[in-house]
Image 1 (cartoon, rainbow, N blue to C red):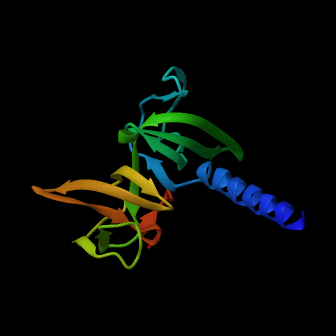
Image 2 (spheres, rainbow, N blue to C red):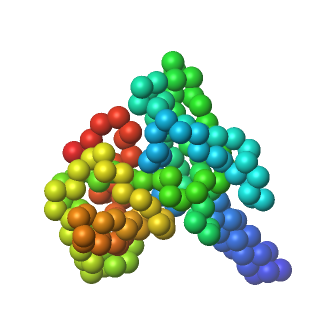
Length: 170
């Protein structure tokens, strides 16, 4: 009897850990477009709200990515205006999300872990470039960019990401 109870308890704990992890944050980002109302959608793709970043009005959102599916990201975006938190939750087109590099030399990897082989190195990466995000996995962001005529893509480690919308992280 004790073995069955113990086994049921273990299964319950591990199944709940999976649920909590599945609903957790898989990455962080910033909004790439300024002074434009960007639609936020519900699951059925109905517009439920808009989000707008404005440097002039000091309205810059930090974004937690909860899920990515079919070129949309389920997000929780937040900013502070006059010490009041503004929070926006919904689905946004992935093209509106970006990330700043935290250092001048950016190493993109083939897989989302530190020991993975380097795919490419971007020298002279600059804060403010807001590289577009294609995928997210456990804090790692997959980006694709063009610098001049050269194409770069790969996984960016959390340590190389700057999610501060106001100033460089270096």
